[in-house]
Length: 506
Image 1 (spheres, rainbow, N blue to C red):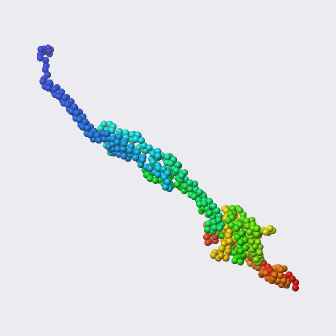
Image 2: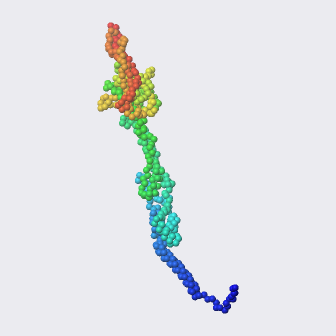
Image 3: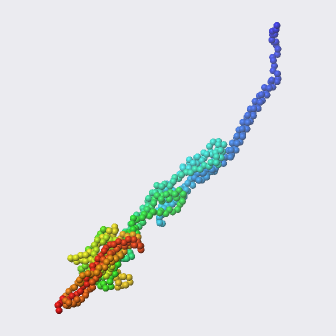
């Protein structure tokens, strides 16, 4: 068996070997070393950081109390300025800008007013700059040095630009200025007026009051111009340019209402006596200068009146049956015949006209109009104005060219224009010549002027041919006839031969 051994007592306690004691001291040293290293590292890190921070702080130091580069307000760089300098500079600049523009509103040498920005409602106060200056300052003055450095670097890539508004020029204020000026410039147009008709003037029978073009200030266009000049800052004079306002009626329009429609002329025979010529003049004087209204009828007998001494007429020969017969008012038929031709060519509507029984010596067959005025017998010449406007008549006895002895009847009719280069002419054509068939006519010479006895005769005149005559109205445009139509067919009867016969028996 195994014997239980009792523990040995009184033995010295077990001692650690010295080796074990040396190892523990070693660990403590490591620990201290690590702590030192850590502290050193921390110190180093802090030192380096401090160094970096100091270096960055030095880098950004120039911009510590001033604005960073690349900062512009209202087009002005405020980099390197303190806030106060920036405020002063920008304020001065804004005030200068507000006073930099002036525009004189002128018209034909007169200056109405001088516009400036403040007058157009543009104002400025330094308070307007504060938000922008604060914003620009904050960009590079917030956070630590590194954040600020980064912000400074970002400015290079991303400049800061801001613009304050002095407001824009007020369109309403411009309008108010223009509205106050307009009454001095605006003027209504004036229509031309026909002042009078002088029938004795051939070249200028009508006098006019000239039309006047009106003026109106186009405030909308002027406002746009002024606002554009204000926006661009262009100073100087702005000449107001009113727009013309045309009148409704011009002298040119009126001239078309009083155009020469027709001129008719007949020759006065050199055998015509002064009394006969004066009778024509008296008749003409009754309607020279007459205005015949649209729709009105002209009656020769009503206007010229009775042919008697009281009315200013003279004794004068009239041709009757191939002889000169004296009567008061001889020659008046030449006045009516000339007027008839003028009325036809002027486009009047002939309402009453009678040809002579015999052809007359002062105009072609078919172009005459006889008139007669006695208590028991009246032959009138009438026409009506249907032109749509007034008609004006000028009637004169005039010299034919340079020949003082040769006289003419001249009648001009004016009224609404017939059209450009449109005129009317008359043409006559003898359709038939009539021979007298039948017995001669014998007149008794009671005074025995020519013959005495019944078997004696003396020829007064031979038989006279008669005629059938057509009269045509021709329309011309320039020199070209464009239409023609027959207006009348007149018959002048053939006349029997006439003889004086004595009255006494042998």
